[in-house]
Length: 173
Image (cartoon, rainbow, N blue to C red; front, side, top):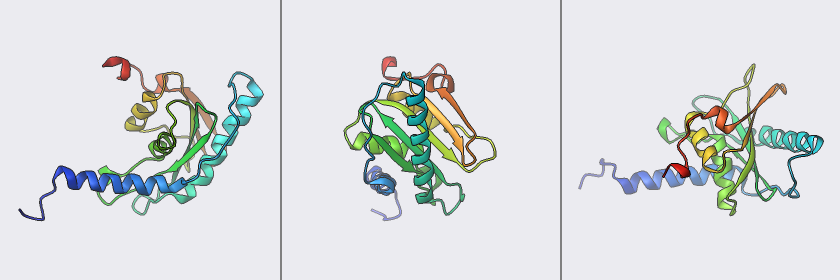
């Protein structure tokens, strides 16, 4: 058998290596007290904490090709915050976005629900998650707030259902 062939096991090993590197962007979860996200001032403070966490972790991004650093922070159902950064790969299809890295960190810690996610990019306006990230965010709830921010503090918040209309989710199976 030729060593130049790439089989499913090899691809799986490469993928798991990338995910492992992505998860190492933030091996410790940040604890916050569980909260109801109904009080406006508490909601604003929580969302600012998410933005601050995402801004901080984006400095750990591995982006030698695009130089596009992204950070994300997830507010899990338990109230804990998990962060993630983008991790690029020379084989571009194996790149992992910050949003998915943060969600995978939360899931690896045992979380099953997400209340909100903040994404921070160094762009003039703000940027939205890619299609793959939108699909992964939707997997963990239809009512998730997606907070999109730039480094200057400009932000926009949308529900995941607005960003991913006619979504395919667990209820579709």
